[in-house]
Length: 290
Image (cartoon, rainbow, N blue to C red; front, side, top):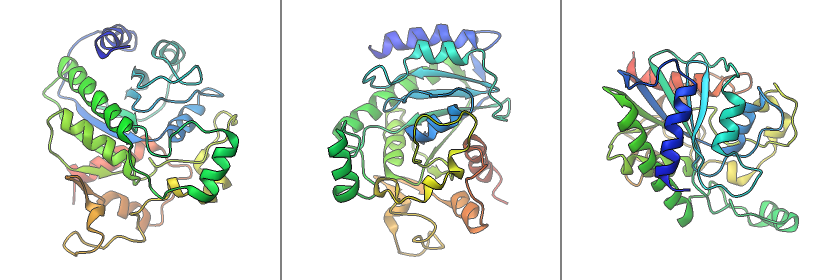
């Protein structure tokens, strides 16, 4: 399905979740790169057995409403389509505590070098012997992110005026690369802010609806592809020091870790913390550094 057709469908879907189908003025827009299991766990609080989100799927979050506005590369029936996701969630109130002047666009990263469909034996081999730490996007993932960026530029330019825009990503490089490529397509040159509690999770389906995946003992199982090259334990305390310099740039988008470092240095944990709330707090620190 091409972007133009998806866009026309979204214009119709957009009107179902708000009182008036109108241009949004003076909004704060946050584009946030995250991961499939993180998204599945978030929506598992409201429905059982949520489906997968395709690479570069985009979910619009505002007030107490969510809508899938871009389905990404749809692989098979285990992945969400626009119509089925929005039909289920248009009547579900989701308490996200998003301020009225703020909208968040959650984006699953593009396809990584670890995201290939695997048989059971291939998965055992990959995760036990051949797994790569903090894998990057592959060439398909790069193209997916570029396509999502073109779509998002068109979508925002059409539906919003006089907005301020911010970008966040998880501590894993595939989300940072995805968001950076989206920014390039939108002709925007800003920093990407690293938000805690947006990283990938271990998720075993089915899971009890309403449970908090971050609190599961499964999160203590080491998975290389979910292990960042840069985290609170291997970053320098100041941007002025020449160590782990690649933790602060992603070809060539600057990364800002200020709130991420504050969150973990004050011994906060993601268990019982809300992903949306942490994205908002990441940007609040940007707007109010003191």
